[in-house]
Length: 515
Image (cartoon, rainbow, N blue to C red; front, side, top):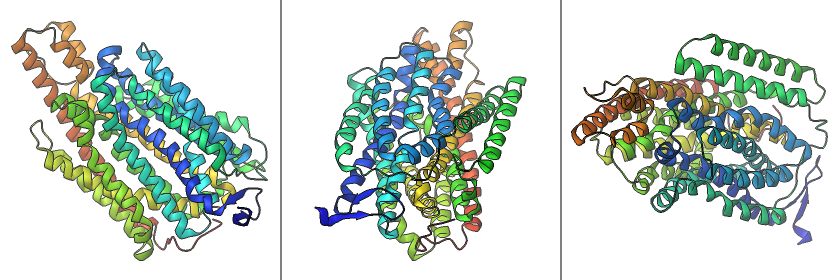
């Protein structure tokens, strides 16, 4: 086995050349962990709403606080991994992720659930940058790295597929908290096998971890996202304005501090590379356009079309299948044609599919919905795989953790903003429905909080009144979903045009080592 060892120049890491694909298998387990957790929440939302009785605002917080926290900490955690070792951070984060999943499963109030999701975000922030950074340091051949990133992305999509199916099965046989406990066996395998297989890697000249920068990054990201959420939900207010000012001031301070530190938490010079900046922007806007829609689609399938949880999970499979298939071949296509044609084409496909979803109504047949989801998956698989490759290949491997964190921050920030903006649009349209005459005011108020609240409120009414209330609520929810789909389509198509111009001349085979 000693003959298979390779020592990489400039670092103290040792990579087992013949074991690199086994190491990748361990890394994708971490991706699977996060992807499954993200998708099962959507299916569990109706059950969680019935049990914990969150308000509409609390329900949005349960959905997006994970993204808020993870977006605020990703850069800090990516930089920490560069300093203390990416393997060490990955394994510690995996243990924490599993432990906090138990807290999520046994939450007894909306407030406890929000706190548990926030803590899960802290643990999750350690996982994704570490996995991509380790791929960057394990795979030195550009074509091998492209394939590894494709497998990494395909596993995330597979997790998105496995989550709803397994979650749907669990929800039909157990209580909603069981969907979080499926993290535990994956975490256990990851830690036990990862200790043996993963090589350690870090930046040997990273310098100290600047806590002031950590605080500025966290305050800045959370402040800005919270301001957007509040403004979208309740309109302009002093509270939203104050949060925006604090957040922007903190981010400005963060950038200024990075430019003056000898060893910054995030090297701002990375953004001078046009391909890097364009890929990050494409990821952010793409997820923004998709996430709010995806968050509410599971509720549409269950509470509007009346599907069982497992059936709803299976209905969402085409998106994951499309993403898995295209993620594995995206690098080959980008080399044969061009980076910008693959990314822009993928984004345009997603945008057109979202435009088709503006035709949704309660009686829409599955062939149209399934075909649209398949196209969404195909487009996203092409786009996200290639942009991740561009980001990683644009930086020195010593800074892989920080660069990966920027990529993941764009992803999580886009998810948080998407749920906040598009989710608030769905909620705002939904709350405008007119309840049937004669329904008690308290019941109407409960029904206006969320579609899940309307389902529960209807159980207290006579049969005809309950049917009329549900029909009005379902129609309003679908109207909001159609509007969110249209806005998401516009964002994706605009992003496709921007990517076409910003990624001009960018190629994967150049194997850039420095921006």
